[in-house]
Length: 160
Image 1: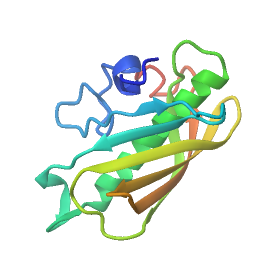
Image 2: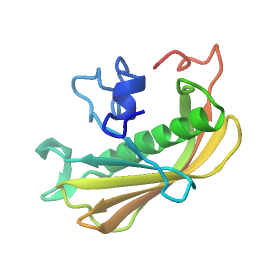
Image 3: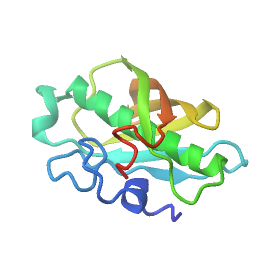
Image 4: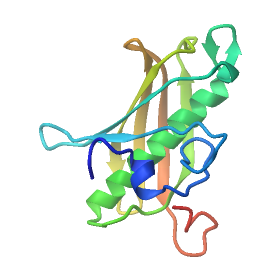
């Protein structure tokens, strides 16, 4: 996988997910990219995203629901990338959010932001991911979520 291409564009170009689907014309279109760990440890997945005026909650601040969606989708892609690599797969398993919690630490300025996420614990079908949303190097929100690979028969199984 080239670090230049987003995971969503490589593995799910037809996805219609509101947060991360390239094919959703009204979606947020996040682009998650892998940054390999220099020390051979856990890869970090990053995303830079700029809100539009219709994403605000009040003058100058990003809506909390948009923050939740950004972190949920970005952390989900971090999980699926990790599960693909750790299980030796050539394509990512379809993962869904089992649970996640967002901490809004301060008002998030509605300007260019940076997301970071990494897997902190995993099994062959589940990954626990921690994510951070920053603006100008200041943490504005954090996330911790559990993401699971679904099997045939689950409604999201063929979504990539």
